[in-house]
Amino acid sequence: MQIAFETVSVVGLGYIGLPTAAVMASRGLNVIGVEVSLRAVGSINSGRAHFFEPELDALVKKAVDEGRLRAVTRPEPAEAFIIAVPTPVDRDHSPDLSYVEAAGTSIAPVLRRGNLIILESTSPVGTTEMLARRLAALRPDLKFPLGQESEPDILMAYCPERIIPGQMITELIHNDRILGGLTPRSAKAAAALYSSFVQGQLVPTSGRTAEMVKLSENAFRDVNIAFANELSKICDRFGIDPWEVIELANHHPRVAILKPGPGVGGHCIAVDPWFIIHAAEDLSPLMQAARQVNDSKPPYVVERVRAMTRSCDRIACLGLAYKADTDDLRESPAVQVATALALDRAGELLVVEPNQTQLPEVLSELGARQVELEQALAEADVLVLLVDHRQFRNLDPAALSGKRVYDARGIWPRYRSVRPEEARLTLRAVS
Ligand code: SAJ
Image (cartoon, rainbow, N blue to C red):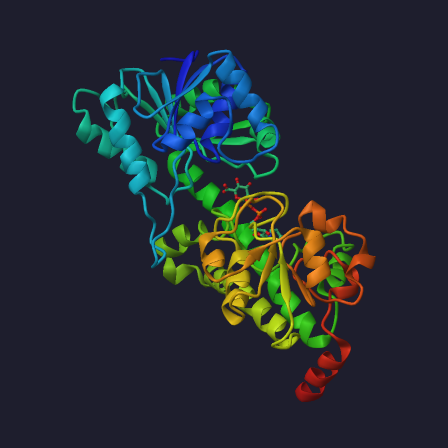
């Protein structure tokens, strides 16, 4: 069995694959990155990451300069393959595994006896076994781990990534990892590979368990954010500041409520619970409700902004990213809110997004204008805070005076609850 790895291939050099490749290269491994995007390949080979993540550019540059990382478009032989490709859901929320299948098809011709294949992409339960069956059909000359008694030629494991954007490099090194081997030797080989750069605990289990662990982590977070989001709407009705309620409730030693916001975005928390729901719809009412609550938040924010604005008001949206201090717009609730407001007032909306140089097409087509924060503060009547970027957190509260403000992230205490007269009216209607 191969237990000391020298050459590792990472298939998919996106948000997970590139940091993983760069960190492995920094530990002395020779890393071949396989990526279909020519733009990404060009950028990486010139020593630059094709997206923003703290510390990543420096790591990529060093790895490329030292000849330990190179990006290619077609797989080459290696001792281990880490697959880190997207696993989106379709419009009907069913899992789209076409990228995993394509990755398998692309590495099949270069596989050799003794290779280790690791799937890191968030995947429905059973995906790693499906990949093994697919590879077995493509390479009948090799024995894959398909539940037979004898030792396979190829080792396979599911080892979910767990890194959070903004702290990816630190978390890659320090987080514990779950190693779901399709055979016990596969888990051992995976441990040998990850121990070259992971300082956290390496915990072996089965492939299916590891797949479910990953889905459980993100579904847990989705459900907990949904609780905070539901609470925020209830507090709005009572004219109470939900962030203060949560802060005070969290003084209880066994309570840790998350933060309400304009909705749940990114390519993980808003997507992964569907992998469970799709496979066990009759058993997942809580997860389904959480998805519905979180998805209801962007339209709720739009309604509240509409309620506080007049048709002649100029609105500025502050932030478009799916969360603070990132440039990532994937599934961003802020983009959803800004688009609805831009539709309301074609050609009028101002948008501040310090981490992007241009607006997404959908917004520019609606005539929204990207401006600097200072200009938004000078020109807008209404400020809609959608992302708690550093630039907004650090703003002097005096800069907001005279503005009407909707703070969807709770960073400006003065503007965190609805106007008292509105709450009084609601309460009267309720009593
Ligand atoms: N959010 C809130 N309130 C909160 C926390 C988050 O509204 O209290 C929102 C964020 O603004 C964002 C969304 O939820 O729109 C998701 O952000 P996040 O920081 O919770 O998570 P991600 O999507 O950046 O990363 C998650 C992480 N999973 C968990 O924390 C369980 C990360 O560790 C995973 O590696 C990543 O998903 C992934 O790739 O699966």
